[in-house]
Amino acid sequence: MANSKWQVDAAHSHITFTVKHMMISKVRGSFSKFDAEIDADPENLTGASISFNIEVPSIDTDNEDRDNHLRSADFFDAEQYPEIRFKSTEIRQTADGEYDVKGDLTIKGTTKQVVFEAEYGGRATNPWGQEVVAFEAEGKINRKDFGLTWNQALETGGVLVGEDVKLKIELEATAGQPDTAEAEEESL
Image 1: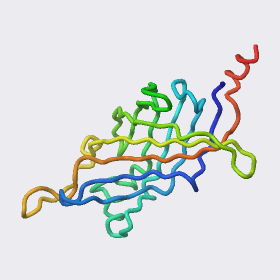
Image 2 (image 1 turned 45 degrees about the vertical axis):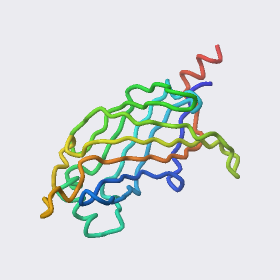
Image 3 (image 1 turned 135 degrees about the vertical axis):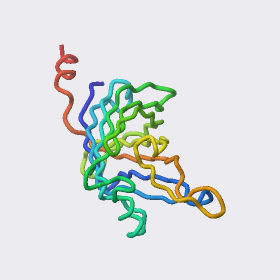
């Protein structure tokens, strides 16, 4: 099957994160505004091109004071760096419907290579006759690698905010137009 362009359905997609708080519990958050460019055969992602842009000011941890602190120069510096970007560089199949998606992640002006473990959720047709696919991807980064170094020591030892951040992407997308170069090649 030829690669096709897929449009992210933001109402049915989520980008979330989890980080340790006070070394004993977790804080969860999400980004409500993002877009993606996906050019893929969903049943064989090895030849896909995937990129994401996340709007940092859309961060939401269910606490306005914390969200404002995360937007500040102590963390994301959203005024100077309003986007988090990801661009795939290599996709390797690890099992049936499972992939390692390697790519460049840019946060706060720093780009590092990361790997997401992705799983194809399947294909369906929505009530309006559009083809729909779903994916889930998970990864982990060290926030300090991206210049997110703010922390506070605790009297009892340890720190307020953990270094490791777990990222999760749940994505639903609708079919767009086939990649014309590959479609023409297949028709020959």
